[in-house]
Image (cartoon, rainbow, N blue to C red; front, side):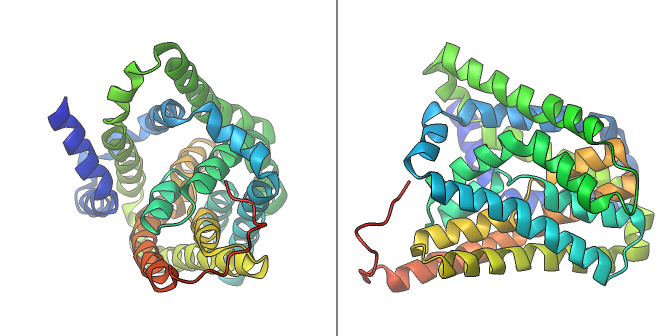
Length: 323
């Protein structure tokens, strides 16, 4: 079990590399990965179950300790990224399927990758975890509502279909994970050590499935889609950081807000796109998953050094509320 836990930790620490490797492999040899497509929702459900196992009641109690801070992060998540996605879709005159795919990425909650990157950046990890949990719980309402509002000009959007899908592949597995943790208590801790491996396999599977089923579309408009995805992600980091700075959050909170806003649950976006729109609509989500793990690692490294430069400064007000 210890060897498996060490393997899991290694795979988790090198998450972005595995995503890139299998994205390339599935593009070069798509026939080896197309069979995964029918299992995208199942893979995401397993990942969400794992997320439920890692959550504790204290993750939600933190909302009561600093509701304003968490509310601002969640609001930023559900306003900045959807509006950026809409603006980029209009600016680059994306085809309907790709426009909806980009917007759906923008309308999803934060992903668990943001928690890892915030930790590596030496940011407020507790804030990141809490904001991810809250935005995920709100996803069944906000993701369909925002997608309907922003994307229905391009393609028909069914609020109820998206709502039911998110309940099935996000909230139910998370709830089951929470219940399992409550019932099994400390015994779950042994299994949690293996979760990074499970999560990486799940996300790699989702990315490989989407890429392998859309190699022709990626060859035709891959540069355009990738450019839009990069801008979406990077602008999310920048605007999130600037917003936190304007609101005079301390440095650790600025990092958490920036990363939480910039990184999305692209696996969920890919699953919803493939299920409710078209395989092509899932391409932006797959590319986002590849790119944001690269950019997240770079941003986290830069931010961790920034903290080292400022760690001797004592400019934080004693009246500030921390999670």
